[in-house]
Figure 1: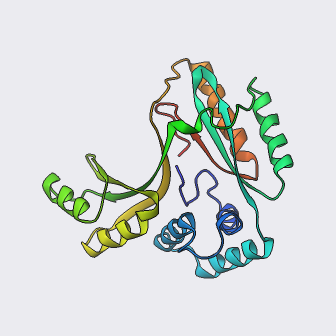
Figure 2: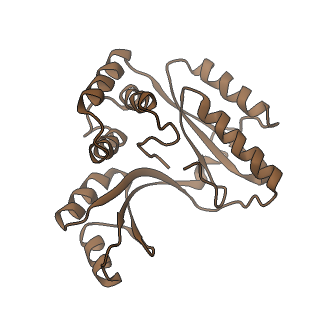
Length: 228
């Protein structure tokens, strides 16, 4: 998931790093950079200081253009991983990812080998409160939602990734208090890892990948696994 606060890099320093990476990858204009638009909206809800956001944007602009890179991997039990990176040196990034994978006996796959499994979508989450299912469906569909998941305590609303800003504004206009929003990649199929040792190794692999400074997110299709 493309979480702002912030994926699995939760410190203030990494918050700054994330904004800087978004600038390098997509530019400083939220209208042209949907991931930045989502990040700014989340930061506002989290009361992240505007001065720090401005400083991170300036830092990203000063760094100039970078590249958004993806490395695809066949993981344990046939799991699919896509390591998303923002880098100014693709050779350095590739070597670091290869080194992290080698510790677990894994190698990079060919371009396109697993990325096709993931569908890019916008997701907005809000508390269900006392709303009935009919009320929730009416509010969400009138706001432009493509899909809705109504849980016991919260509601997840999905849309085209480029339409998340419009959906957010429409929901707010109907009195919805948004809890979280993000650009996510939804797997079309999942893999189960039930063996405790293998699951532990997968968890350690994910930790190692996220330790790499260029890594923004690691997509995966392992059922029930989350670093949150």
